[in-house]
Amino acid sequence: MSTTSQSPKYGFTTTILHSDRQKEIEHGSVHKPIHTSVMYGYGDARDLAAVFQNKQSGYRYGRQGNPTVSALEEKISKMEGGLATIAFATGMAAIGAVFQALLRQGDHLVSSSFLFGNTNSLWQTVAGQGVDVSLVDATDASHVAAALTPATRMVFVETIANPRTQIADLKKIGELCREKGILFVVDNTMTSPYLFQPKVVHAGLVINSLTKSIAGHGNVLGGALTDTGLFDWSAFPNIAANFRKQPAKMQGLAQIRAKALRDFGASLSPEAAHQVAVGAETIALRMDRECANALALAKMLAADPRVAAVHYPGLPDHPQHVLATELFTAYGALFSFELKPEIDCFDYLNRLKLAINATHLGDTRTLVIPVAHTIFFEMGAERRAEMGIADSLIRVSVGIEDTQDLLADFANALASE
Ligand SMILES: *Cc1c(COP(=O)(O)O)cnc(C)c1O
Image (cartoon, rainbow, N blue to C red; front, side, top):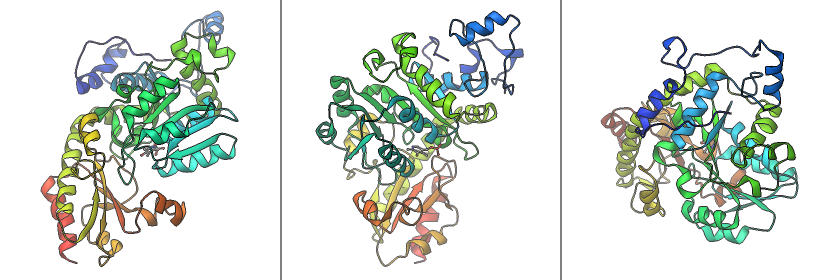
């Protein structure tokens, strides 16, 4: 398991750029090399046995760990200020791992009504497998508090919800979980560790879809689960005796690595780990530009009489604008908006020349999608209404294009109406 080494107090980007060179440098290689071997040979069979018995550290088999993937895991730990990280093949695999490894039949999970669509779908699966799930409006911690039962093992929220940008009451939920000794899991994908470290609000586990802002270029999938070191695993009832032999701080991730990564096998490939690591080097530069572009575009659309609503935490009338200002270093690269009923959202999207009709977010290119008709179609009209998703809602994931080009594209598509 790769844990973070004490590094000098460098800034965010300096730390990412140089993290591969803080341990042994193979052949002077500046990038961590891509190690493709699935198996690891030992000169002394006793060493192999010691590795299997957790008496000695070392690699065994590619599904459970790989040096290139470990280097990325360390990088993510440093970005999140966490203790240790496990990488997965996708963000969903990282979320699935939390439930597979840590929840048992009869346990209770509290999560948000405003969730990434596939996570919402996953909680339905979880509910069908005997875990009781409560979905509450997590923009107010009192709803979370009211849903807690003696069987509640975990509270799981996102930072900024996609596509309506509701922001969870992160500080108060964190305090509540700490007070009650409940594991607080935060999906940080929408903010990324560049805008926010969930450790600050006392999250025990942090999820990142590496596919989004961290890799950033829409060319690789990945996910990560980081232990912040703040949760007391010795008091968590679902740790099996085998993992209790580990130091208390490592018990959660030790069980997740074995029971979820090893047994379900959604491992990140070393080639993908390398691509994510290269993408991550520029996350600060990309997100500064994306967030500035998003704010400019959201402000322009909010001022246009042909636009019915704009949902972006950077706008002063957003319900959680004050909280976002307090917690995040910027308001994110994603917003959504509704056109006035006389404008057909498909016609509008088809008039955009730069923005691409595509599902994905956190990319260098600006992407747009009619939410109700695509990513939130499967859940049905009733659930969409509960989540505040209008039929005309357009989600925009803002890229790094030159600001004036983007503003012109969205303005021209309105003007030619
Ligand atoms: C995309 C996303 C995921 C899933 O990540 P994948 O890498 O696509 O599996 C999870 N949570 C949030 C908030 C996301 O935006």
